[in-house]
Image (tube, rainbow, N blue to C red):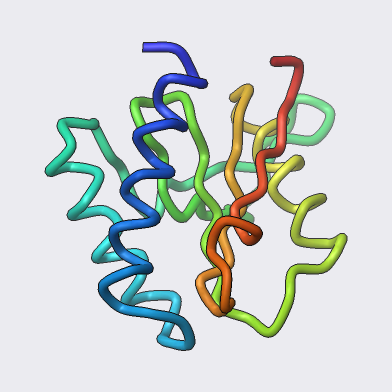
Length: 125
C-alpha cells in the first residue's frame, strides 16, 4: 500500500473514533481506541515507537516517541488540545526526517470539526 492509500484508511478510522467518543478526552484514550480501529481495519500498527537521535553520526541517549506508526510508513501524531500551533507541525516534520518517513498526519481530537483537524505533513512525498 502507498502512503496515500494508508492515509485514506486512517482518516476513516479517525472519523469512527471521533464520531463515537466526541471531543475533549485525553490523548491517551484516543490513541488506544485509534490503534484498535486501525488494527480492526487490517493495518499493521506500532505505538510509542522509539526514535533515536543521531548528531554527527553519534547516537545520543535522548529518544523521541512516535505516537503511532502505521504500516511502517505513516506517522500519526495525536493531540487533544485547544488548537494546533506551528510547533506541532514542525515537530511532526522533524519526526519524519529523523525516521526517514514520507507522510505524517497531525490529528487534534479536541475540536468541533474533526475534518478540519487532520493535517498532512510530508517529507519528500
